[in-house]
Length: 319
Image (cartoon, rainbow, N blue to C red; front, side, top):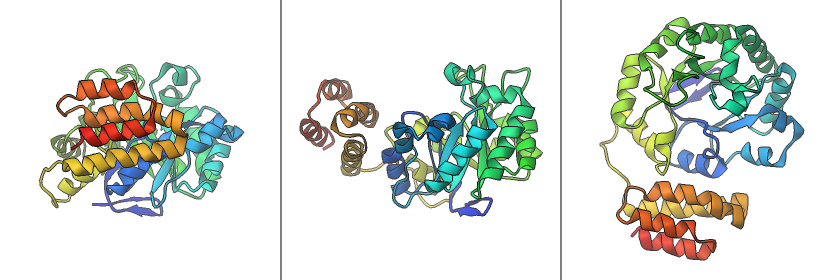
């Protein structure tokens, strides 16, 4: 089951969500390797992109063969449009506008989900980005700012009229942050408001969840985030089930071990040894969490700085 995003056709409808500190180049490469049809970068501040910040450029670099979208956050039309052009030049196939981030630092800068409170400003930013690039532009948002202003259907229609080619809706308000349950049924109102593809996001942690959210929301596809932690193969598993191709099987331990090792090597290559080791700790912890003696293993990994010893420890644990 595929989705058409403007002039781009992707061969699946299960997408990797943008996640700060997680969906960097090494992780996107892994998820794409397992078969995900579209992956998203970490949220990138438009001002940092325009300034050519070294860290930001590294965040937006693409992996070999991946179909990826760069997600931008910001509150100024000119800066957002310039950043979008830059992203297009870097090879992004799609530009995604963030109007869903609930984090206080982002919201206090009038970006992220704060833009849902100002539809006029939001529309100007959307239009400026669409007009600045030739690649398709998409939008990610929440159901609204709070329960009294759940305006996602209206904003989705505004976005469509401005030229946006797909919208993703996380089924919570900004006020909820990540508390309570994602309201999948509300996403159906967004689906009914527009003709462009609508993607459902939030609390999709199993294949059962994936089927249910599609049924309840009527969405064209789903976007999975935290359920991929330590499971870069999960999106391809869900896609296979939705396409009626595969039974519910977990990867063999040898594949998990090889995946952890490849991920670790890519982190060292991408960030350098010192930073790579530090950033790898959380991923190794996620990979190991459901195995016996994982608590002891994680504690040992978190106290180690030598990459060779870490590799040896990984090989001994996943066997």
